[in-house]
Image (cartoon, rainbow, N blue to C red; front, side, top):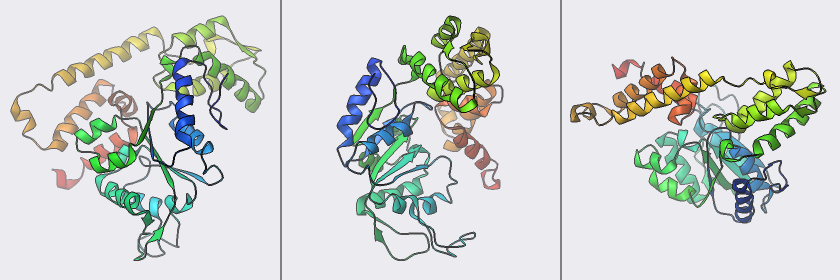
Length: 332
């Protein structure tokens, strides 16, 4: 079994062996890395592996999720602020870039960053200096940038949501995380690893998976990837009994649930095909078109924003933020 350097990434499948080879090749460089892959595939773990195999391994690894921070606070989170620079700034605070000095700065969900902050990030990449909010002084920072997204960055550039100049600054060493459904027997390899880990944490005695449980795991599509597998195994361990984990304890969707999910996807495909609409449809403001598509997806998913986000390929926080913005008085 081959592991990525200094990190707990497991995999014997061909896609993972290729990934490990690429991680080892990329780690020694100082160039920015751009990781793509579906939610739950382990993009941050990959970034940690690259950092651990680099000459910066002794330095800090600082991760920041661009999609989880309100847009009015992301500049402060990245570059820091001085006391009194805005309401709530009760003291000086270092940002993620300064904290990562001498190491690696990991920007997760980079495509969630709005264009105003993209400009500030681009300036940082061009100059190698930061300017905390409320300060008139710049300071140099030495970091390696690794970023990640669950979207197609080229499509984001084409749609005008991601600056092309920033894309070319960041997309120097691309690396793609394979989805769990393409990793074959790695599903069972990971499941057994999680079984041992969570049994130790929960004080449970399960030592193996039944044949039926293994078959159920292998037959599942894993839309949530490794994160979903972790949750399924932990829940089964907490609720199960005995030394063998049975299929009945696995919280996997029934065949009917899978058919329902496929029907939702087919419905959204029909919505996509319906985009060949009259020119009048596109004469409206862009935000109105986007609103109709997103609200249609949410309706097709029975009102579930997380389900709609997964199918649309964005984070739930993005949809919540957009839906909130549509409620602003200025938009009516």
